[in-house]
Length: 338
Image (cartoon, rainbow, N blue to C red; front, side, top):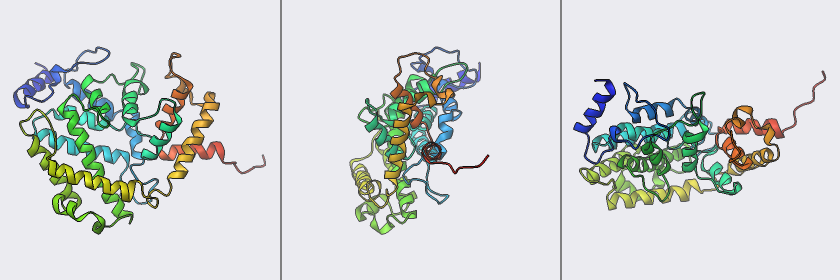
């Protein structure tokens, strides 16, 4: 018996009856031979970690654009925190930790430079709109490619979890729902931490009732939320928070929107970021031949519009790449005598 079969057998014995078994995956779009060592969900996790889109997350904004301190979160550190929280909940509930991890690591691959600012600009500019969860799915289905295949050819369950980590549609798996909760737990709490570090808010500004119920420190709040989900969901065929903890988690999220996410002082550099993305978008629509060859060769047929090509290119940029590209295209270079 190979290692993968042993792992699949162990899943059937150990995991909850509500868990998603790797041996019962709905499969991949393009059928592949099974790996002797890894389950399909483990294989998906590895493909995501080794992708170029995953590496670029380290230079993409989480909340604060181009922060000077070393300890502010990036989109990559956010992803790792979501993965850690997701795995803790999934393991406690007897769910498939490998599936949970794969979804968590892939959920933000489609995020733009400059965080949600970039997403909002592209949503305005593109005729079909832009949503980062849809773009994350587009990344793993199409934009990531190598000499063997177009896209990562992930399993249905991982793709569904990535797409449904935000928005109105819930994931079909409990593992995907766990990631959806973990995403919110992670960003609310680490954004509070970063906002305090940036002197945008102080610990005294956090609503007193939220502090009393959820905890004062970063770790206390995360622990409260995780424990609540586990206690409220153990042995059940759904995953959810209790009404009480859900209420104060939502109040904390509303506080962050009012004081940080939409605050003029905290987001003072956003207009510049919006301008950079808008100008790059308009430039490449007028000059599509100037798109890099490596990007253009992805589009092998004519079913993709020029607008799609430009949007995909800009959405994949890191913050610093977008800034440097804008500088090289639009800022005059000093004249030199040759």
